[in-house]
Length: 103
Image (cartoon, rainbow, N blue to C red; front, side):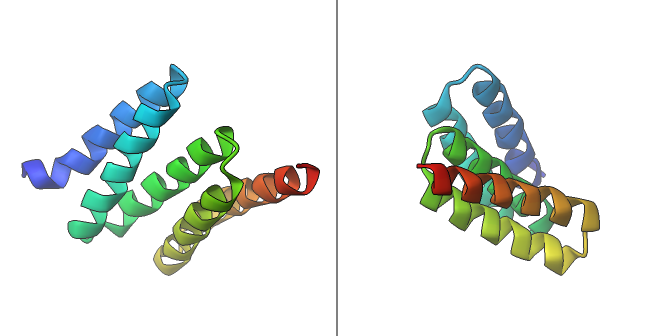
């Protein structure tokens, strides 16, 4: 049971670190959440963690990495047929693209 809940706990901890603007710690926790979710074959949690990691990377101006992570999340959300999350992730990708064009 612990293996199934750990990605959710790490995701939450990453969100807390993000709100505190502790970017490196936030990214580490969310990346580990995505990794464990993938191991657990929990595509739902993996997609959310990937999208959040993409947003964190964008906040750190790591646009190429952010784009790659958001695209991975988008692919999972499409597989899961989660229309609202597809739209949210597409919007994040558009924000990253706009920031890349400005830089």
